[in-house]
Amino acid sequence: MPLLTADEIIEIATRLEESGDVFYTAAVEKATTPGVKALFMDLAEQERRHHRAFQQMGRDVVELTLSPDQWDQFQAYTGALLQQHFFASPESALNIAIQAQDEQAALHAALGFEKETLLFFYELRDVMRGAEQQVVERIIQEEKRHVQRLSRVLAAG
Image (tube, rainbow, N blue to C red; front, side):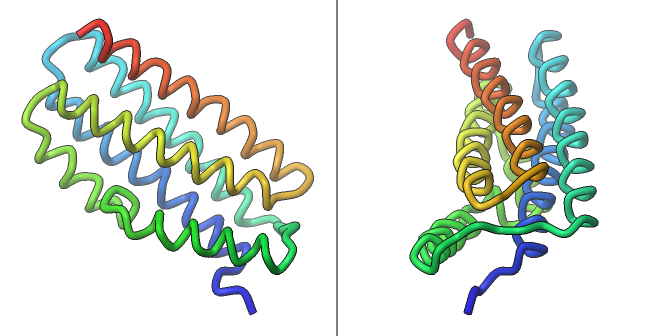
């Protein structure tokens, strides 16, 4: 018997996006350069958009396509991910942003968050079907751009 339902998986994805929004909104205060401040504000807005997409998905019937072995692997991965501080709650994400010593620390935290989120969404895409899978794929492409943008800023700084 699965430990998580499709609704719970969508709830996790929604919470991840909410955590990202909270983090980026707070990280704006750590930004000392206009470019990084604008980057954090833009990423916060994109996280809000992703949050709405997952909320809509949660209102629909979501079908998962997993064999019992695949479900076990997905459960194990999801369980490990949820133990990460960033993913625990929006409050945890806020604390990470507040504890960042400076702009560079906030950028590094953001990059780590985006990489972990991206891995989760790859897993999520693989268990979805139909229109939901396409939505997750679109969000994956946007998350990849987040990683690229953050990486470029860190490399330049």
